[in-house]
Length: 167
Image 1 (spheres, rainbow, N blue to C red):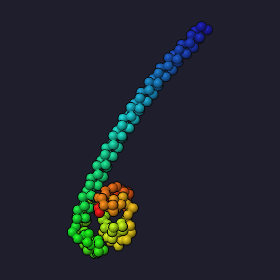
Image 2: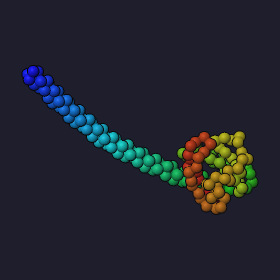
Image 3: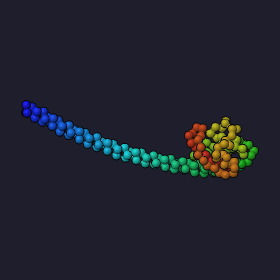
């Protein structure tokens, strides 16, 4: 009877050793995997943040360049000789023929000539659409107050546009 109980005891001890070893190995594997995942996730998050910062900076630079370009183009177009006279006499045909060639050479997507109240006299990109008011736009408000104003605004067809108003 003593040999049977010793066999049970030996099997039980062997089972305990194997079980403990499996538990320790499993614990080490889980701990290692958790550490690796944690490090990988942190690194991935840092890289994503860096890429987002680079993209944001690039977009800001692009928008500022567009804002500067728009301002320069509109100032140049506003210096066309006799344009003020055409506006005062409401000569839409003369306004259109005076500014269209330069507008086509510029990087501007749209160009409107307004009266002193902010009403559209000429809209080169949509020649048949005139008479509406743009007085609520920030760039137009600034121009009506006598200052060159460039701003970013949401547009009808675009999500964002750089707009310049020149008195």
